Length: 94
Image (cartoon, rainbow, N blue to C red):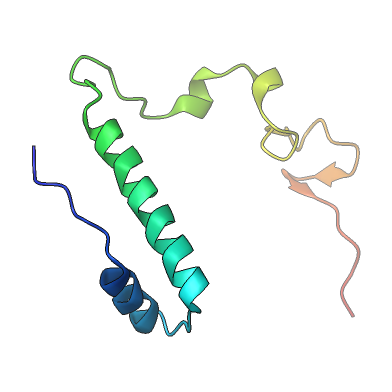
């Protein structure tokens, strides 16, 4: 595995400058710890063995409609009371 990146205050300050952020000394210290924690979590994720896991190509097509959010649920326009010719009836725009 690759050598882990050490997050220093200098590195955090450089990232802040590239992002056009001005950080107070307290924020610099806090963000340095947080970035270090995030990279630690990424290193943990890289250790997970996923070689034998089949990727999902279209997970929504394999889910029952009841498990989708309301805004994701597929609506058949022909069953919608305000539909016509495969579309939805909308108010006119003036």
